Image (tube, rainbow, N blue to C red):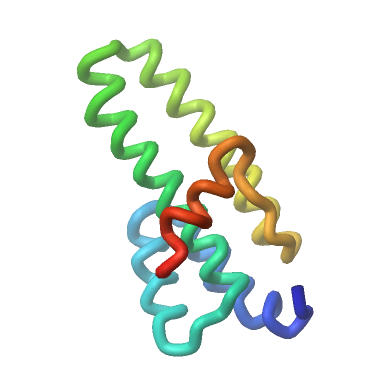
Length: 108
């Protein structure tokens, strides 16, 4: 990826990792002038936030707290991997599901 594109989108990509509020802010920051690096991480974080919401609504409620805690821990690890990639300026896919996030949310 081009160095200038990464530098311009790095702040937005990092802000997108700050839960739902940061994701919304990053979405609007990237809305006017689309940056491919920022869009990459916004798509990653939309997917991880959806998994976390579904974890709270479905897994904790119907399967149990232990399963929900395990899924929450896995999502946290994926979030850390994504955040480190954004800080380094690399487009680092979240393991196992990152490619699906890029495909499912390609309009973002």
